[in-house]
Amino acid sequence: MSTEKLALTTNSSARKPASAGGASNALAADLTRALGPRKVLSNLSERLNYRYDAIQFGATPLAVVLPERTEDVVVAVRAARAAGVPIVGRGAASGLSGGAAPLEPGLVISFTRMTRLTIHQGRREATAQAGVVTLAVTEAARPHGLIYPPDPASFRTSTIGGNLAENAGGPMCFKYGVSGDYVRALEFVDADGEVHRLTRDVFDLAGLLIGSEGTLGLITEATLRLIPPPRFTRTLMAHFPEVGACAEAVSRAIAAGAVPSKLEFMDRACTNAVEDYLHLGLPRDAEAVLLVDTDGEDLDTVQDELQLVEDACVASGGTVRRAATDDEGAQLWRARRSVSPALGRIRPQRMNEDIVVPRSALPDVVREIRALGDASPFPVVQFGHIGDGNLHPNILFDPRTEDAHAVHDLAHRIALVAIRHGGVLSGEHGIGSMKRDFMTDAVDPDTMQALRGVKRALDPGGALNPGKILPAEGVDG
Ligand SMILES: Cc1cc2nc3c(=O)[nH]c(=O)nc-3n(C[C@H](O)[C@H](O)[C@H](O)COP(=O)(O)OP(=O)(O)OC[C@H]3O[C@@H](n4cnc5c(N)ncnc54)[C@H](O)[C@@H]3O)c2cc1C
Image 1 (tube, protein in one colour):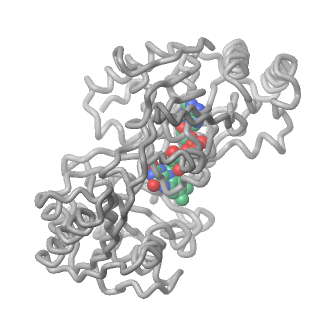
Image 2: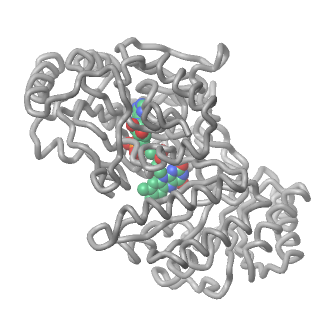
């Protein structure tokens, strides 16, 4: 989605306005002198590749730095500050809220070369530079009898820095928690180019950086907690004639004492999109499909827990299919993992919302969002981590032929449904620029002022990822 079409505004700040060509040459020349040509991209053809994330196009950066160590980040931040241009951190650019897409020409710091990773088996920890890919942590930990549980569906590409900046979650988050729950210590570079190493015992400043989307500091390294993998996993799929029954089954199972390791929901439109793509024999007529894993050290306990879930599904009117083998379980999860490519076949672009609502409100929320979708020209599909009430309504559209303003408007109305039901805008994808304008609906003016106070304290000049999360001053609702 183009920023021009959405007419996004940027935050006011103390920075000088960047004059495109001159600032670019001077900044790139300064950076090249300080870091050497290998770590700086200044050609337009190279810089064009750093203006988007997975969902949004932004401004072409004036220069791109590819740091290899924390000291390179310090040099880059100081050069950008001297030039008076904004600084945007970037991992794999798999973000779904426009976070890594610059809104103004400035400096992009791309962390993909900061990939040093050390496993400390005795301490059950990993030390990872910001650019380490999520999957690499688990792959490196596994020979030591350990895993790293945070599992965003983008785990093959997304980076630890990006995951922490978004506080990414995944299907395992109901039982195992999200990215921030695994951070023991964090190193970051602040807006002045100072390096800080934070543990979590004093004021939990590391917690402040987690989920801050690159607006408060640039994460350069993290010490991550690892755990032993569960010995056994069992899987079932249930389908329901209505969404309410599915939500009720989940609540029933949890009330009965089950803590599934994965709990995922797909609505009818989503199930049909996947079935059209993969032909797995999914129940096309079901209003809701639920995928569940239980896991643990003891097979009997794991199976008993799955039985609790099965009983809850049946009691709520669901039809249950258990996976007989691990392979069959993997096949069932293929359905959920293939949602993104399946949706891509329907329309080339999607606006991916990430609301969280109380689980009891899910049936009404899903129904109201479907009604909004039906009354719009766009296909809307819904899926998500139902255990946490985290729902991803996706608006599918073609930016070449369809009106981005209408998409934005529908996204706003979906956000308002969540807020009306006591929910929030984002469970794991962040606010970025995409949902920034909805913040005035979601946050009261006092809270907004407090958020602005935090931003001013850590980034007084407004240099770090401007225009993300917080609406422009003066629009506090
Ligand atoms: C197919 C698909 C599936 C997805 N599934 C999930 C999912 O299940 N769960 C989920 O939570 N997300 C999911 N996402 C969204 C995305 O993958 C996550 O938000 C991920 O954590 C982003 O990581 P990244 O390295 O790509 O970060 P980027 O997209 O590069 O950046 C994301 C944000 O972090 C900032 N940032 C990046 N690196 C740093 C750093 N070192 N320091 C400070 N700020 C930084 C950027 O400025 C930006 O604001 C999915 C995306 C796709 C495309």
